Image (cartoon, rainbow, N blue to C red):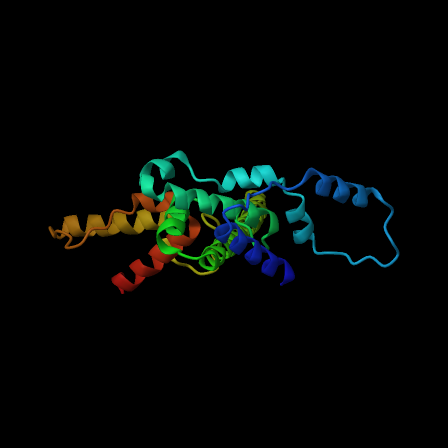
Length: 235
């Protein structure tokens, strides 16, 4: 909380005092931190979270470079608003060094929203915190989906090995716990062929035809959902 309050105070000073000049992180401060890190640890040491330690190790210059507006933003911004854009960059330099929740990057859309929808320093700080939290959530969701997919593929590989050995391996294109013709390609072809032959013998034209050739190129979940929907249509 104290760190966030200091960052907001620094922003107010940067916007109100014309003589205030943004200073990059002092080299002496970095050297002092490095020297303190090399000293032997005391007995009473408070261990911080791994996330906080990882954030502190991020190089300031690279992080700041990822937050800068692209050339497209400069070109699309009217010249009369360039001063505001420069002021936001100055605020961002301080926030990237002192802020609590720092985005990993800012897209062109984020910059346009900063220019057009924020008027005060507080609003910009709130927006930057929102972007940072949103990016973290997206990364966690992506990791969860990736882990879930890896577990599914690992289990499917085990079931395929069982199936190839002649054992009961269950999965897509393998044995099924429920005899569902919409989940077995051979049964689908046999069922469709039988119905086509029956219609030709009776000289009848089908009223509705479904082209499901693309179905087997989709993911397993899409195939399953589409099969259930077609079952409802047929029934």
